[in-house]
Image (cartoon, rainbow, N blue to C red):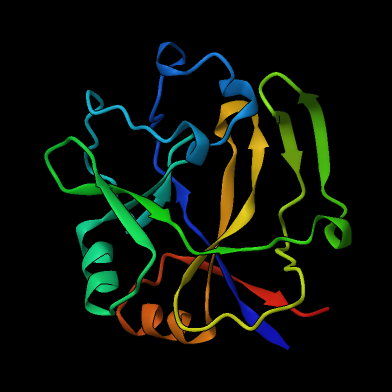
Length: 181
């Protein structure tokens, strides 16, 4: 049975943060724990409504933000970025539990002082604990995946949300099924 969909966008050619902008333990943190953007960075001519910086930040357009606001989707935050066009860091606060045991996710190089891992590998396909059917809405996994400070969660939507996104013309978003297997 399909529980929902993970949503993916393409790289947009930008980095959000430089090394100088990172806290001491950044290597063991993720974009949500770092929780900052570089307002000196200017974003221009991003062609897709949902894309990702090379360091793991989900960036959306004004069209995407308006879709979410008109749809009444809660648990979302849009952090305005600098540039000639309105772009936003897309933050999802509604969390679902990822199942790292079933997925056999690897956790590499734990740092006790920083309370984090240098790498968390194995997000695809997304497997959820207790196999909840995702209601119409946006979700992120409790685990963030990737290397060093570039770790970010898997973003997910309910089946109805996918239908609405496609009907609204967001054809460039890649949807991967989240199954209950």
